[in-house]
Length: 346
Image 1 (cartoon, rainbow, N blue to C red):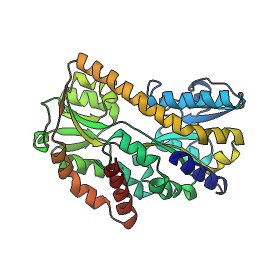
Image 2: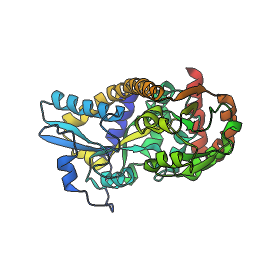
Image 3: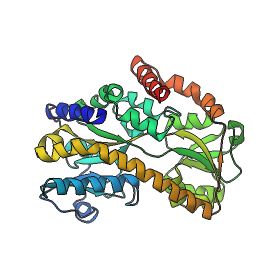
């Protein structure tokens, strides 16, 4: 019920927000014709997505589109375009703002470019579990003001999704304490925050494109990376970095976004269905993640990977200075306290 009430408020606010002009990269029309899932309806709303069709978010969003089509008698549906066929995530945010793309799934780190307070949900160890994260993202008392803060930038946050749990893996040895990462260069997402996080965790953070990581580890430029088990197995990083350690250091959300103008133009029955069904979609995505991680874990083990637990408290303590430094205003400190309080209530 919390999620439904929050989403109702967000969509209602979106309907009263004036849309503005935005500079954006024109979309490749051939991608619209060739890249989508092919669902048919009188009106099809396009969803930009950067991962393959096997990803839990793609599957859950595709099912949402099918349910929308069936519930509205074919009046409307969502069509998901995977593999960046509508452009990289950062570009699709601009396209959403301009109304050229109806929806996009974007990484939580990108939202900091529009409101730095989103950093709270991207900090190490802010969430204790996937269930804790889900509770927070569905609670309008915690997220309402943060999510609605982007309306004046022509962005509506429709829902937060689970984006996996990131752990460290390497080619040298199992990691159990921060001291074990000494001397290891670990690929991180390109940001000063992530570089500093890896330094505090005991290693050296090396920003690099995901497509270069396998070769970099294989050649010794890197000792490892950090990501969820799905990426680890599906990109065959288990072949060159067989030691996967459950540091559980990051669990930042992904967000399904749209624009106030797009939501205003939607047929009422389509918008109403989106509001009513989004909770079922995020719940399904969570269940699919469980299946995907189990499958990926098995694949990695068959490839020779070794998995181990770590001294989590040691890693939490190591990165706490970064957390404290990042909470630099009353809003972020209150958000962080609310998130941690939700964990203590579980």
